[in-house]
Length: 316
Image 1 (cartoon, rainbow, N blue to C red):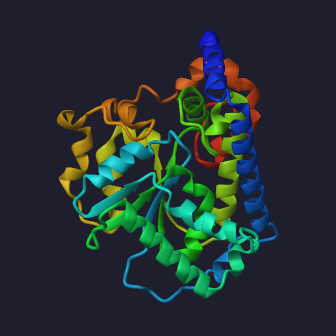
Image 2: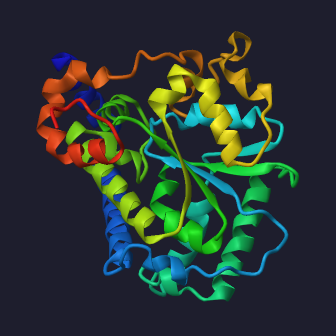
């Protein structure tokens, strides 16, 4: 395990060899995280809910957002839902980021003005969202639209303002396992994945993201369904059935097609697809224990989230 960690450190450093680009990604990411935190500063639990007013509907149902930290099982969840005839999944496309960038370019205070955006702006953003979706896929108006991009977890507040009735599926996994998996998985360099080049930075980014999520969850009236990776890979059908209930769609056995042998293909598209569909096993659960000596310096940072999300195993 020691050599493995050192090898991943070296490999990730090579992936980020363009330090100027990596530094730019880090700076942008950290600045946006800090500004988001400031937007929530001073808000008491639940107080932001009153500022999220319902807007006139355009006939389109508010989407469902599949969020979480990368490597939390979102790809398998994506495939289960997309196999259901009543659900249409949009896979890792820049829909929410298009709204965010639209506001950032205007330079009128976003995200500090997140809770004071006027109704006309929210309706404009809603229209922009669906236009973006329609450029990416042939939207089925009869299907439930699920927008899957894990790090949209950062923008739950913006999503809630634009879509008051949005549902959120939160994918969870043991914080130690998820940080280890992100660190050991090659990603294309961008503002999110740049933080996975070292184990220390991976843990820090996880803590920043999940702390912001807790702030948003407490401040906003979010409709959330949590799914644990560990439950998903151990017994997928009951997890899938509860998910369909949350989405208000009837059960269909086709939802289990992605785990049938004939469908276990090594498709490309996300870093986790091959592993999460070809090897729906419990082998990755608790893998962090093999590397506990390397995670030990980071456990104090992770323990609050281990406890908050109902996990154990670090002598807490």
